[in-house]
Image 1: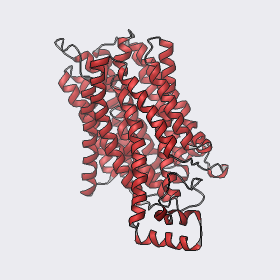
Image 2 (image 1 turned 135 degrees about the vertical axis):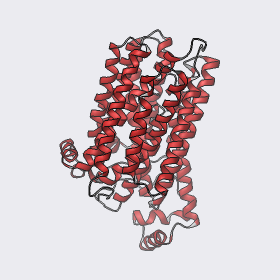
Image 3 (image 1 turned 60 degrees about the horizontal axis):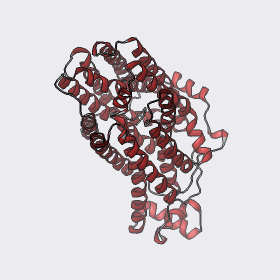
Image 4 (image 1 turned 60 degrees about the vertical axis):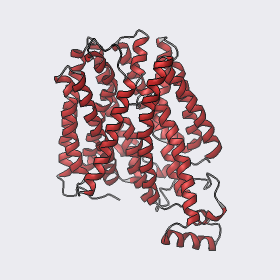
Length: 479
């Protein structure tokens, strides 16, 4: 796993998915925002074709049947069709995330085993973040024009190439792998979701089913992350540090054939009139207080989170007692993923108790700041692992909260543009932190100061969350 393959990023692939899907479903009622599609996809059961008829306009009778079904709820045949769609998407989603998570815990140990010091490893991570930042700004538009299915297949190829470069100790080859990994990361967190939402609309499925798909995606992502940690740990024990990357390549090849055989092509809007410019996105963020606060929260929290992605493995390596020869990074990684799932469960409980997302965000930022400063204060393996688990639990709270807030405050017509605008300073901060690692001595004392910096970033984000929740229109959904 490259840039995003961290314990915290699991919630990014699934928790943030829900809110983007929900707001996308709301936009489907506006014909100017609907994505173009061939309206086919997976083979439809004959008795479920009424769902498609309302969208494609096959004939008047079927249109009436589709409208009635939308009012009365899905029939048994429609439910079977929806279930088949869910199973297919969740299979593909689980496979790509499994291939991603397999790599996460052993990137740093592999680079270290090749003889590179912390400074050289930091450069490798920086290259990955820069590649993701550069290509991430254009990858969505490319997928909309070329086709989401084609770009999903391209992800499998590009990420497999990234895995194969890990078999070589040559530094230039590893740098090339990081570029492939950055491109793959941009594809991973854009084209699969875009394909699913567009296909869901084109089939005329009820919009509330999108939330159910998200719920299962969250469960599947957490499950495969834990499984990947255990599998990767076993592979390393038996076959060495390159084994998880070889196995991930095999998973990507399998995914390629599953997509080839079951996914139809769909596209986004190619009409320039429906595409917001980068300038408009920047102005919208700057002029709207709520969007600006949400953007600041995202930039500061995720900057700290991605810095921890790089730091957690070397930190634990530095504080482990001399009596421990090798840490079980895969098992530790799985424990962190369990923490994320626990945080997501707490989020749902708080919502049921009447908490708003704004209030949850304030508490989450405070707890995360307290957790991430622990490695700065204590040189103890148990304390650091406990702090990392608490921070990951906060990530499990953060991602559904920030996703909901984006859905409330960012207009759907400019949502992708605004999100790309926000991600730019986020990547700049992360790259700056990683580059500063070059000035450290590579020990715990050199790393610890970065946790203090991350704590300050999160506290500033907490200030933005307080400002967001104190506004007169806090919690009001934007159209």
